[in-house]
Amino acid sequence: MSSSPTPLPRWPEADCFIQGTPDMYGMGIRVAFYVFWFGTLLVIRFVLKSVNDNDQDAIRPSTDILSWSLIFFYYAVFIALAVTASKAAKEIHSYSGSDEDQQPFQAVEAYITILLISMPAYLQIPTFVLSLVFACRPDWDPNFKTRREKRDANMDLMPAFHTILILIVSGVQLWFWCSGVETLRTNNCIQFGFLFVRVDLCAPGVRAFNIIVILTAVVASILGMAIDRGLWAPFRRKRRKRRRSKGVGATDAKIAMHMELETFFYLFVSILLIIAIELTIKWNCIQSVNYASTAGQLIPLFISVFLVAFFLYNWWPSGTGGDGSNSTSSTSSPPSSPPSSGDTTTSDEATTTVSSPPSSGGNISSEKDPWMSGPYSTRVVRTLSSTTSASDHASGEMEGEEEKEEREMEEEEEEMEEEEKEMEEEEEEEEEEGREKQTSQTARKTQKIRKSPSTWSFGSESLETAKNAENVGSVETICSTWRIKMFASIRTATPINASEDSGGVCNLTVVKGA
Image (cartoon, rainbow, N blue to C red; front, side):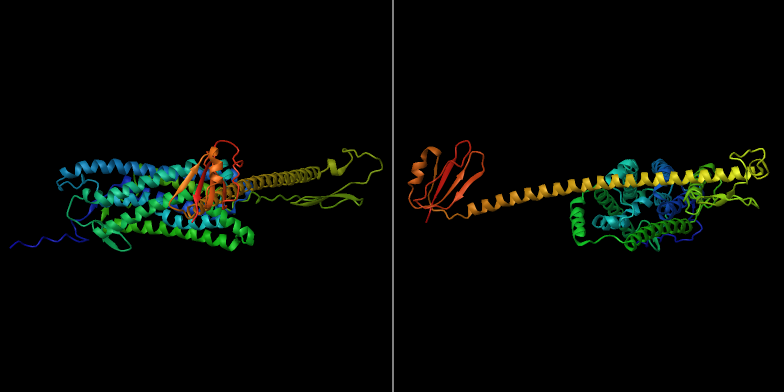
């Protein structure tokens, strides 16, 4: 009688610990990703929504740097994971288990690293749901941009890299859950993962669930990209026409609701991934990864903190870059003024009264004038300079507003032209559908003709024979261009007119009536 197999040791057994890989998922690497995630959330939710249109071009380089840095972090970690996992797969068969310092890369370590780079893939599922809503109601989408705006913003390269990253992460996830989770194990200790509770990574249910989730993310990514590229456009145009006819449009409350949903999904996925990563490290007793002491961890950490802090400092709504009008100027006026009448100058920032001294002559000499040569001359010049600069600033703002209005009018005209083209295309499609429908109806009528056992066909040279045919039920004229020229029910006495054909030889099919 064979003895039952020895059960696998459970956490926290003293022998079941893992010597971690700090340069893959150490404290510095993890915190760098966390800073990027929440920094991106702050930028999208608060900064970009509060920046006025005049600052959009100025803020774009900063947002591009932040986005590209995060994407490069994802790609760098993926390359390191691919190299380390392939090396571990070769070394794992020769590992004896005696040397703890030379322990190969474990499955749970690959799991943690994959979680770090899976943020874009997991976000595709809630993003796809919102994309469906935005496709049906694009006026609810606060991020909606016309094709011209996307072209001007050069928004084609970033989504391409983002989509490639999602496909890469999805491929790595499928490899891991199909075979990697078994290949990278070197001992009999259970390696735990996170599925809202502590679970065995090798459990069939856990593997199947993760495979389904990642496949759903891939499908959502592809469909979301298709919707963004305009495959939903015909349905969206019909909905837009109905809304115009009914006078229904978006409200600030609806737009705010979708912004809140977008923020909630992003925050939910971020917090869930952080909890999963940190609990997995704790459950599996992974050592040497809870402090940042190497250059490989400190460099990404400092880069992420610096970029996010620099961006928020320059573009936070209450900062100097957000609204660009926090600086105020004040000018001091002289304590007393001569009794004569004066001139008053008013600006947007301050109001200063400059009085003219009494004079007997028409010209004022600066040598005798205490206001122009005395202790107040500097103040007067400074006041006049500030007033001039304020007026120049105001005129510059007016010109900027006029240019902005002109750009908006041009964009509206271009959008109207695009909509008119789309409506013309829709009308052409409807006309073509109508013609096809009419042709199909005519064909069905032709098929419904009650035929007798015998049918005669005559060429144009046999018209007299066709006219003299007895008991004729109907005549159908089909030209050489395969278009129906004439269809009429006639009797024997009705003459057949073959002049309807403009060219070619018409074949007359005379169907004998009942």
